[in-house]
Image (cartoon, rainbow, N blue to C red; front, side, top):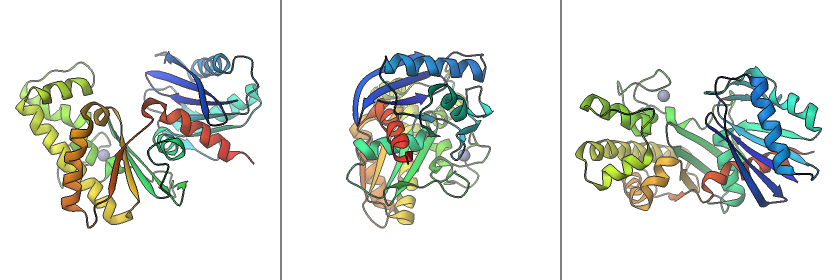
Length: 296
Ligand SMILES: [Zn+2]
């Protein structure tokens, strides 16, 4: 049995697989104000609850942040207490089975490539639009990580000289123009107040109610995604783009159509653009694929 895990700052989702078939899932809330060791204990409990008493052939993990793929050590993970923490070694010590860890966005696209929307393609770019904008690239059927493991950070492509400030500290990134955070920062000076990050469902609801401020923010997001995906198409000419994440899921096909129209205006080609097929389960599939392909 293989176990795939999606470890995030608010929830941990796990899936138990027999070969490539998802048998069952389990979700727990990620405890806050805790230590790396305690989080690891929760991860171990989740794995054991998923496996029941079956022997575990491998565990794959998708987690946000910077991961040293050679050692499976987590340098930093936003909203999780991992700092230079050897998660792979600690888990392997207890579980005595192969463990593989990669960045959540890479793992998500790997899942879509193995079992979802990107399955027919060898060269594909994934963009995940939510609180931020994550991206990943598969070239010749393999995840492309780049020299410093940051390849696919499409959210931080600079689109607007002297544009709005981004979470990364730079200005005018795609993420600052088209993510939920970017949309929220455009609405707040107009008097809108939000608790935490604005919800995708609220944006969808206001858009449908013809809220002109939300429509203006969404128009900017659509143009920015058109520019960004258009530039990526010109740079990489992949067979397809797969779009996912909370905002894409909430706004649905009508938004996808408008993004496609913008890409068509801007790119030298008219690329295939699809929405993710696996939704919340993409990371589970990707994590299992990760550990299976890492086996000797
Ligand atoms: Zn940025």
